[in-house]
Amino acid sequence: MLDLLVTGATVLDGTGAPARTADVGLSHGRVASVGPTDEPAQARLDATGLMLAPGFVDLHTHYDAQLAWDPSASPSPLHGVTTVFGGNCGFTLAPAGPDHADYLMRLMARVEGMPLAALSSGLGWDWTSYGEWLDTLEGCIGPNAGFLVGHSALRRVAMGDDAVGEAASPGAVAEMVRLLEEALSAGGLGLSTSQAPTHNDGDGRPVPSRAAAPDELLALAGAVRRHAGTTLELILPGCINGFTDAEVELMTDLSLAAGRPANWNVLGVSSLNPTGHERQLEASTRAERRGAKVVALTLPHAMSIRLSFLTGAILDGMPGWGAVLGLPVPERMKALSDPDVRRRLAAGATSEEAGMLRFLATWHRLEIAETFAPETSGLAGRTVGDIAAERGQDPFDALLDVVIADGLRTGIRPPAMRQTAEDWKLKADVWRDPRTVVGGSDAGAHLDMMCGAIYSTALLASVREHGTLSWEEAAQQLSDVPARLYGLRHRGRIAEGYSADLVLFDPERVGYGPERTVDDLPGGASRIYAGSEGVEHVYVNGVAVVSQGRLTGATPGTLLRSGRDTDTVAVPGA
Image (cartoon, rainbow, N blue to C red):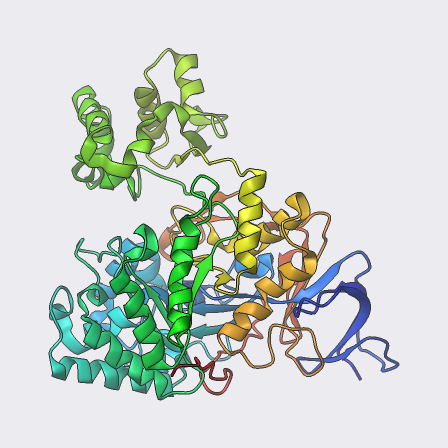
C-alpha cells in the first residue's frame, strides 16, 4: 500500500523532459510509481492545477548553526528547498570544540552576519570532533543536510592563534590534513576555503584560510581525493574582481589534485557589463582544457541588501564611520545627533577613499525598507529624498533623524537596479550554461542584511513573469543539476526508486514574499525573513515539511554523509 498518492499534478521530473500530467505514489520515503497505478493509498492529495517538481537543492548555505535551534532551516523549505549544504567559505563549527568557541562565534558573527547572542545562546559547543558535531544533527533535521569541512576551522585547531596571518609549517599542514581526513571519514562532504579580501574575523583580521599558501591548499585537496563522494568549494579575490591567470591555475590545480569539481561563489550577470560574466567563465573553459572542472554558482535574482545603523555592516567600511558605528548604542545615537559628526560622516562617505561605497552617499535615493517606532510609522517604502523634501531637510539629516527615532533599527535599502529584458535574457543564457549552477543563496547567513533563501522562488517567479526558462528547465536547474554536481544518490529527480523529496507549487502564483524583521533567534536576536507565495506542499523523504504553505515542524531529513549518500564525481584529467 502506498503512503500517499498525489493525483492530477503536472509533473516536472527534473531531467528537462516535457511536463506531463501523472499520478505519483510514495512509499517508505521513496517514489514508488509515476503514472497510473491500481495500488491503494493511505492518503490521497488532489494536486490538479499544481506543478510537482523534485525538491530543490541549495548548494551554498550557512545553516550550520541555525539547525541547532531551528531544525526546519526556515524559511528555505517554504521556498521548495529539501536539501541544504552548509560548511561553505571555509567556515564550520567543527572540528573545533569548546576551546575555540569564542573565536569561531565572533568570526561567524562578523563574516557571516549571524548575531553573536544567537550563537552563544543557541549552541552547546559540546563536541570535540567533526564527527561528534555531525552526530548532534542526526535524526532531528527537517530538510536533508550535508556539510563541507571548513579550512579556517581546520587551521584554528591545528595552529591556534597562529592560524591568522601566519604561514603553516609542514607539521601544521600535516595536522590539518589529518583533521580533514578524520572529518571526511565521519561524513564531511569535502573541503571549503576562502581567500576573499572581504572575509575578516571578529577582530577585523583576515580569516585563517586567507594565510594559506598554494602548497597547503593542494595538500588538503589531496586528502579530498582519498575519500569517495567529496567535492571542493572555494572563494578567491577574483570571484569579486575578475580572475588573474594565477587564480585560474590555482583553481585548476586544486580540482586536479582532488580529482573533483570545484565550485566558486558567486557569478554576477548584468546587461550593464554584458561580457563580464564571460570573462569569469573563461576560467572554467581553461580548466576544462587541462581536464579539470570549475563551476560558478550564480544567483537567479538581483541581490537586495538591507543596511542598518544598528549592525553597521558595510556602512562601517566608509572612512571615519567605523569608529562611530562601533560605539555602544546610546553613545552612537548621541554622536549621530551631533551636527559636527554628521558633517564628518557625510564627508567620509563622499571621499575618494570610500571607493565603490560612495554610491551609498546618494542619500536621497535610499529607500526606507522597514521601521519600528510609532513616530516612524508609514515611512516604509518611501525614499529618503521624499521624506527630506516633506520635512524641508537635507537628505542625510532626514535619514539620521529617522534612524535615531527608530533606535537605530531602521532598515535601509540602496536603490535596486531595474532588470531589463536584456538582463533576463543574459541570466537565462547563463543558467543554461554547463559552466554554472544556480545557487549561492547564503541562506542562514547575513541575517541582518538579506534573506537569501528566496533564490529558488525568485527563479520560478522569473519564469512566470518573464519567460526566462521553460518550467522543465527551471525544475532541472534547481534540482537535478546541483544534485548531480555533488553526486547525490537518488535525489534531484522524480523517478521510481528516488527519494520522495518533492515540491508542489502553483505556477500562477509562485514567488517570494516581502522581507521583514522577526525576533525569533536565541538570545532575543533578530533576522530578516521572507516567506513564499504559491508553494503549497513540500515533502522530504515522503514526509510533509510544508503543508498548505506552512511549516509542519516535521524532521524527516537525512544527514548526508560522503560516500554513503554521495557518489564520487570525478574529473577527466585526475
